[in-house]
Amino acid sequence: MDGIEVLKTLRRESITTPALFLTARTEVSQRVDGLDAGADDYLPKPFSTAELLARVRAMLRRKENYTPDLLTFGGLTLNRSAYEISSQAKRQALSGKEYQILEMLMEKPGMIVTAEQFLTHIWGWNTEIDTSSVWVHVSNLRKKMEKIEAPVSIRFVRGAGYVLEEEP
Image 1: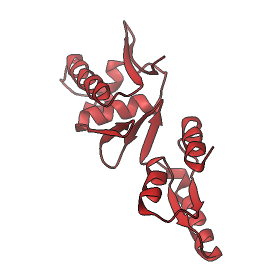
Image 2: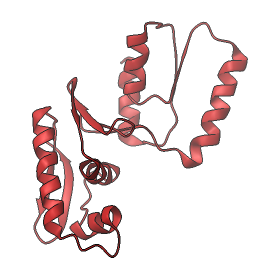
Image 3: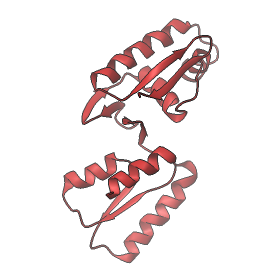
Image 4: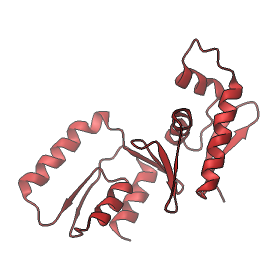
């Protein structure tokens, strides 16, 4: 298993663990692959020990407030910086509301998120927005996930809410 596969496995278990790649790979595309896989930093060899320690200290300072740019679940990646999803080398841009809904689902994969939780978190406590707005955004998300052949789906649980699941 190479480092990128190890990192993907780690990210499925913990999105908050900082990850720094130390590698002999120097091509820009290889560094981008590592960062896109969820690495927080990338340090090509040869490197100075002082620089390595400074980067580790910086990552540890941010650990308490760490929010990774990439959330990954079951082959679907949400890029928080670019407001886009990707799967199998295909990318799809998201609207702001689609992004917020998917982010909530990806932060709690396999757990039900109610329409009311979406409304409160995204639109605020005193919103006059109806739950049908959530349905429309989820429908659009499903289409975009299907377009990039994401191996996950958003399932509606009657009387409860929505849940993000890996497809069998």
